[in-house]
Length: 299
Image (cartoon, rainbow, N blue to C red; front, side):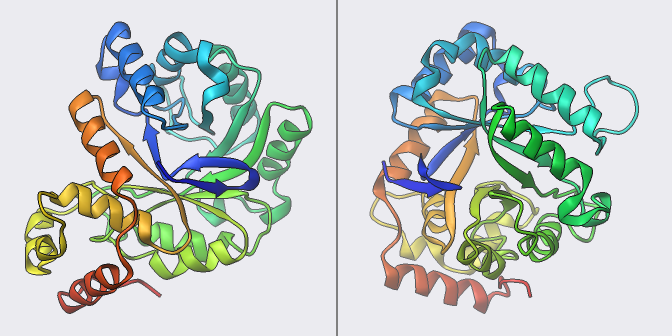
């Protein structure tokens, strides 16, 4: 499976990463088997969060003994008390999260720690905000290797759902010069951040994509069919495979993280990723067809 640079030349991650949000739905034994299958397949990038229930615990119990085989990414500013807002954007919460994450996942460092979905106004100090400084203090202490950020997508009732927040935050944060990677909502049927992703990459920022296969809209399948994307698939290829490869092909994308609790779905995602990126003419035709049905990048 293709590997790409993420954040720095010494971080080469597989183009397909594993999102560990769904593994708490499994038993500890099932999650351990799935996580080991992830690593056995060659995937070397795992993304999780304290917000994902027992996900970090299952990673620690399931594959801590193979820590040298994967790059580990988690998040901070997650309120895990069960009371109050889901996220608290202050140093105390971030430091509590990182210390708990290291302990639970049985590791001495995270390769990437991401501020979990703040808007620019929630970091009022800008590039010198105390939370940004906290991340760099963690780097100096050896707890993390790269300081990063994710972008929210809200919910279906929000007019900015699912990717307008990603576009706004990419445009706002890419010039701060403090984040090594950014995690954004993006895919063939959600092209909002496409141009901004390429711009951020040109500034040396590693881009992690999520939601490439997520059915954000009730008419998701209809949009795919109206664009005629199935006509561009290889023989025997299904829509998930094509959509995953489209996201992998897009300029600036370092890794596409896809979560699953199913070994069957994992195998299908791996097979798609191993096909590699789309041919240039197929990718360009897909962009043309998507634009013809109104699916275009945001500004």
